[in-house]
Length: 158
Image (tube, rainbow, N blue to C red):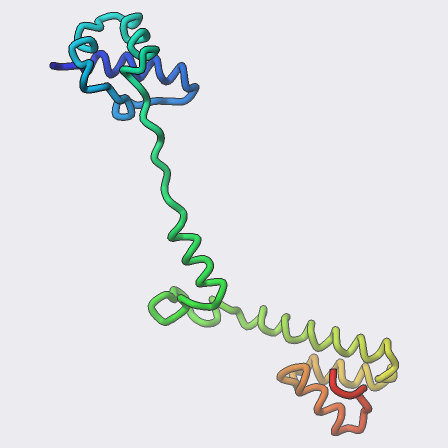
C-alpha cells in the first residue's frame, strides 16, 4: 500500500501541467482506485491516471482576509485604539511636528483667504501671520475670535 513514488511522480507531472509547483501533499488520489495507482510504476501510467481524473491536484489554500478587512473597517471608524492596542508614545503615534504642521498650514490657508478677499490688509495679514507662527492660536476659530476682538470684520458665520 505504499504509493510514495506514484505521489512523487504525480507531483512532478502536475507541476509541469499547472506551471507552478505542486507538492506531494497537494496530490489527491481517489481512494476507490488505489489498486490501479499501486500498479502504476511508470510515469506514463501516472499520466494516464491524471487524465482519467483518478489523481488530481488539490487547490491552494489561501489565507482569509475577511478578519483583516473587518479590523481595518473598525480602525477607519476610530475603534480598536485603546491602551492595549498601542505600541508607542502619543508623540510617536501623532508626532508634535505633524500636529503643528497641520495646525499652522490650516491657519495660514485661512489668513491667505482673508487677505485675498480683502478682509485683511497686508499689514494686518503680516501681524496675524507672525502671531500664528508664534503659536498664539489654538485653532482657526481661536484665531478668528481674536481677530474679531481686535475689530477685524469677518464676513459673518461661515
